[in-house]
Length: 511
Image (cartoon, rainbow, N blue to C red; front, side, top):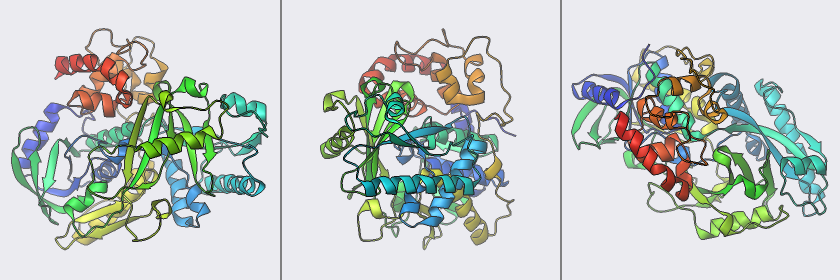
C-alpha cells in the first residue's frame, strides 16, 4: 500500500513514469471532488489510474460550495424521490464511515416570524418530518443526525443570537451534514486514492483527449507527452465541454458572503431564512471554521465563457443581505461583509426554466472519440457518481476490475484508516483536530518548522505545522495552494495579506 503523502518529488516521479510510456487502465481528467472520487474508486478496484488537474486540487466548483452535505430534502419537495433518497444515503455514508472527522451534524434553525404564514410553516414542518423519514430510510442513526423538533423563542435566540425577537414564535430546528471544508474533503479523497496507488498530478493539463489517449502538458515546465489508457474519463465539471464539445451545460452561479461570526452573535445554528415569494428556497447563515459565518446561496444563470474564478455580482450581494435581514434584529450592510465567493454548478442544459429548477441529476455520456464524461450531479453524491461512471467504463472497455469498495472505505484522517498515527508530545489545538481528525498528531509530529503549534498570524487559528503539512503531504506547490485551498484563509483579503509571508517562508523552507 502506497504512502498518502502528495509531494513534489512524488509528482515528478509519477510524471516521469507516464512520460516513459506506462500504460494506464484509467486516465481521469479533473481534480475536483468528482475526479478524485473516480480516482479513488478505480484504485481500490485494482485498476492502474492517474488523475491530472491543470490547476490544483479543488480549484474549481469543489471549493466554492456551501460546505453542506445535503440530505436531499429539497429534492424530495420537488418530487425527485430518487436523488433525495440517494443524497440521504450518501450523507450517512460520509458521516458514519468515509469521513466522520470532516462531516458533522449542523443544526438549522427556521425562525417562526410573523412574515411566515400558516401555509409556509406547515410546508417547512412537513418537509422536516419528511427529512427525518429520509434519515431513517438511509439508516443514519439519530445519534449522528438528531431528529427535527420545534423549540421556543428563548432557545432559538440562544442558538442564533441576532434573530429578530419581535413576534418570534419559536423556531423549527432540523439537522443536516456540514463539512469542515469542501476543499479538505477533496484533498482527503485524493490522498486516499494515492494511498491505494493512484497517481495524482496537479499542474498537468490534458488536451486532444480520445477514448484511449490524451496529450499531457506539465504546466510548470511546458513539456508535453502522450499517454495511453484503456478508458479516459472527463470529470472537468463546468469545463467538461472543453474536452467534449458535444456536451451542453448550463452553469448556475451560487454566491456566498463571508462575515465575522460576531456579526451574527457567534451562532451555534445555521439561520435558515425563506426567500420571499418562494416556497422551497432559503438562504443560510452558517457558522464556519476560522470564526466566520458564510451567507448563501444564490442560483443565477451564468452564460458565456467559464472563468477560472467566478465573481459575485453586486445584485447577488444585495439579494443575500436583503433576504437575511428579514430575520435579523439589526440589519447587516455591505460594510459587514469581509469576503465573498462564487461557484458555478455544472448543470445539464435542459433548454428551459430557471437554473434553480433544473435537476441536480448527473449523466454519464460517451463522445464520438470515446471519451467518457460525467456531468451534472452534486457534491454529496460524488462517491455514487464515481461508482456509476466506473461501472460504465468497466463495461464499455472490458476492464478487469473488482467490485466498488468505497461505500465502507475510511478516508485519510478517519479513525479507521490504517495510516499510522504518530503521537505529538504537545496538546493539539481543537481547530487542528477538527480539520485533520485522526491525522492531527501527524501534522505536528512531522513538522520541522519553528514553533509548529503557533498560529500562522495572530487571530487566525491555523498553525504553522498545517502550512508545512500542506506542502509535505497535501500536494501544495504555491502560496495560493496553501492559503486558498489547503486552508481557507484566502477568503478574506486582509487575512490573506497577513498570512502570505508565513506561507512563503514555510513553502521555501520545505520545498
